[in-house]
Amino acid sequence: MSHATFARRALAGMAALAIALIALLFGANQFSNGSYAPKLGLDLEGGTQLILAPRVTGGATVSPDQITQARDIIVQRVDAGGVAGAEVTTQGGRNIVVSMPGTPTKQQEDAIRRSSQLQFRPVLAIAAGSPQPSPSATPSGSPTPGPSGSASPSPSPTASVPAANPASPSPTNKSAIPQALTTEASPSPSASTSTSPTAAASPSPSPSASASTSGAGQAKGDPYSLDQITPELTAQFTALDCSKDGALEGIVDDENKPMVTCDADGAAKYILGPVVVSGDKISDASAGYQTTPQGQQTSQVEIQLSLNSEGTKQYADVSRKMVGLQPPQNQLAATLDSRVIVAPSFNEAIPNGKASITGGFTITEARDLAQQLKFGALPISFDLQTREQISPTLGSEQLKYGFIAGLVGLLLVTIYSLLQYRLLGFVTIASIVAAGALTYLAITILGWSHNYRLDMAGVTGLIVAIGFTADSFIVYFERIRDELREGRSLESAVATGWNRAKRTILIADGVNFLAAIVLYVLASSSVRGFAFTLGLTTLLDILIVFFFTHPLVTLLARRPFFHGGHPMSGLDPDKLGAVKKTSYAGRGRFTTNPPRLAGGEGSAS
Image 1: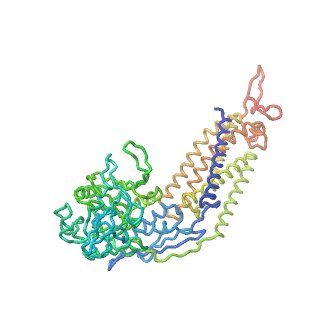
Image 2 (image 1 turned 45 degrees about the vertical axis):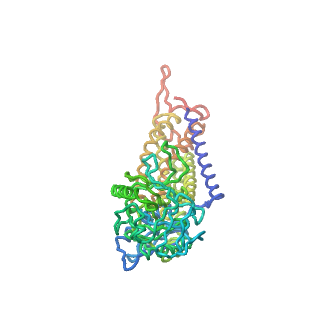
Image 3 (image 1 turned 45 degrees about the horizontal axis):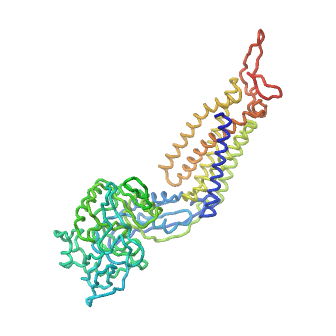
């Protein structure tokens, strides 16, 4: 492939990229919530301030270490949500203040303040999430377990509660409790979701209820024992209506005690034993689509969990103990924010610490959940104390001054390029304009897709990038001039100069990009905007130089105006002080630089 053909294809590819980005931005505005302008950060646009107060019970206190740990985790969650420029600080060593640009959604607020700690608790009893009309009832008020699995609203502490099938539609509505928590390694299901719809577990510590389990040796204090179900717990369980808003407000989630709770959609309610495996034993979490043992991807969304060594041992011990119990006591509930997200039963032990949660959630919900789990569990939960709008700390005036500074810098680079390189300087101007357009499109699209926000530090990064971009062009043009000074033709100088210049450009941009990565990883949020735009513009600089500037110069070098060395081209060998070459013709000789063809077009050597 000739240099000219490659240059044309490279320019066509850049044009196609620009058109694709413009089309994407247009589609985001027409069919989504996109905008044609970049989103601005907290310092330029203002936003929302949330003050979070720790949730405590009784005479419990919150230590400064817990607040610090909670702040660090909240910072990770805020940054992972793509909200650039957010500030997370502590207030009085007790509250946490989160200042976010724009208006956060309810999902974002919940993700920030909730503990999001996954805990595994044994199931002691299950019932419908709301009171159900019983088709037949005995005078004593105890329900007759039927195929519907309905539960009686009777507060009697001795009423037996039928176990709901977590794999079947709930008796309260048509939604289903999530289906499975299984090992990845085993080709056969290692955790069954089928629970007998007629098996009953009594929510009372009566002798008959204890005798219904197969774990005959259970003692009081055993997390799997029905002896934990006190009359008070039974009354709380019977009175709980999961269909009501705020049904779980004020719930005490003590990992050392049993608790009453609902599932994620309110279809069922549970009595759960103490925590047997805590969420801090999770070493990694990811979301995706489940695959078959043959490696084929299915439409089933799953969250994959990996437990650390201690968690693997605990989970293996739990599965070995629960596999022999009767339903629903052979079910292990996974709770998140005090709600059951899945409650499968065991039919064999799970020794490898690799688990998969599947259920009725979308891939987006699964990824959000996996993200929260991956970033760790807050040591405490928080309640929203105040929520108010805050004004920008800098405002439009500073943004205007920032843009003026950028325009001044661009003007100075333009003047320098035209004085130094004559008409070749227009290549520099065109390249900077192309880089600016791609940067604008990229930042605006990232604002729509990843909620990236441009703050004043980011604007500073864009201004600094003008100098870095100009440096790349100067290196390239000076290499071409050096080759012309050595007596090469323009086309040869362009090819040779590019081979030498591109290594220097890659090294310089590589250093800038590494600096941007270090700043982004180690610096605070106020500096991350600068680091991000610096890294983005560095990558775009490489793209522009390789696929716009060099191809454009390659094509211009074939034009008579530049090829003939016109004085205004900026590539005149005479003005550059090219080395004089001596050629011999018979017994005479002549000196050329090389000689120009008639009319100043072409060259000879």
